[in-house]
Length: 373
Ligand SMILES: [Zn+2]
Ligand SMILES: [Zn+2]
Image (tube, rainbow, N blue to C red; front, side, top):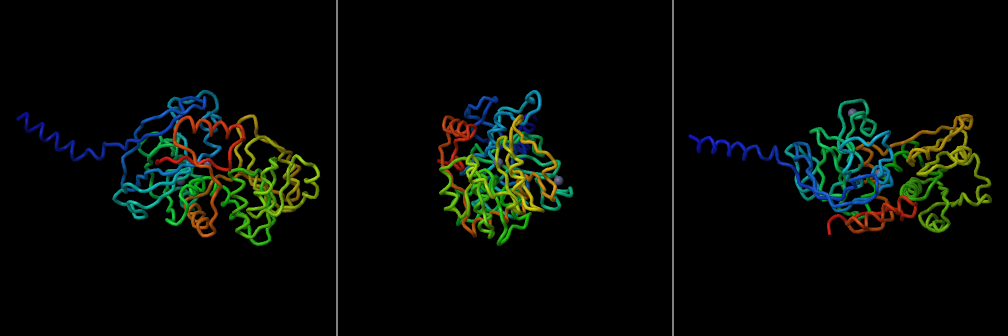
């Protein structure tokens, strides 16, 4: 009798093992607000019927990763379970496994994952394809997924994601340069589209880093006349090379002359405190400034609202939805718009150094970690 019970038990365990098994993952994590990465093994949820499992090839490093790693956005005490934190929301890889209801991908396809891995799917924002504004969105890391598991980002060898939040990556693109489009690309593309930038539009890009240089490339491709504002003189030539008509070094008062009432749209990507009113004054009547840079507490710029008379508008924009993210990837492939990147090795010391440089404003336009050797 016992052997029969044991046999039955083993059969049940074997039948249901896939439900209980998890996906083993290996990555790099920070364990406190001190920026020091360590190797970290963890489990991801099993591949559900609408999920895809992606082997990660490249992951970009975003300035927001530095803020999250340091806990800059946490009010009060660090919540239990916040660390270990595996950052990374600019992910490109190859599909290893698909759930039984998945239609968008087959095994072996290239796929990208950005800042979100799930949302409620039912609210007004989700129905409009603007999942980034869903109240129940699941961030790629430092969130909790539909099975109750903590989410971990792309500084790791694989990721499990709801099919809707995996983007199709055309096979013709340079994969190592596509990863940053999943955050930096959509963050800049979305407000240009929303504000109907077209031939003849006068666009300014304030802050010429990871976001800013992509903003210039997209705006130029859409036909705009683009002016770049930055403080680093050595970037002047590069701005011209990618099509900016004018470069203004904001430390040089002479160059700031004749900039008032000049722009239909300003994309403000500056991630530290700055004189935001200076830029508001550069807007034409009915002009709009979009805030894209994220500052840490204590560094958020302020504005006197009387500067907004003249129907000057100012709003903040957060990445983009799944539909627009796919549109941005297809637009980037068509116009060959990719970020300038420095590829770095996937080891703790190298990533530590990259984070230190980002934190000190000394980084190249974008770091990308080569996950698979
Ligand atoms: Zn980002
Ligand atoms: Zn929703």
